[in-house]
Image (cartoon, rainbow, N blue to C red; front, top):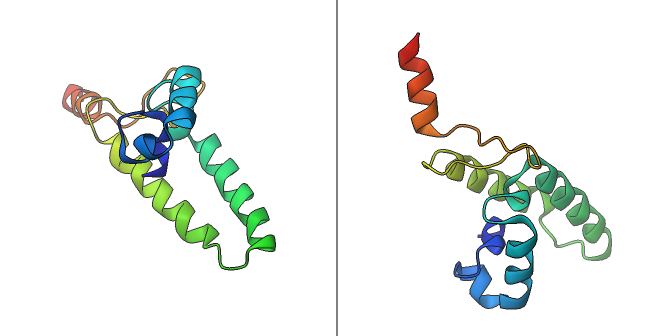
Length: 102
């Protein structure tokens, strides 16, 4: 659910409306929060936090985050995994069109 903080009507967006609206205005939906850069920042931030709070499951949260991004990348909207580049990777429709052209 964490990557969807960029969508104010998502579950986490409704729990943190001010933060969600700000992120949405800055990056849009499935922008930065759905990128490899955000995954790296999350992982390094969580590993730093883990030094203060040893019970934080940094690797588990990161793996869950990545699985969310992979699932979103399979939807028609895709995901900007290489944000800020305006490229949406792994959209199934795009993938199938390229596959069928061969």
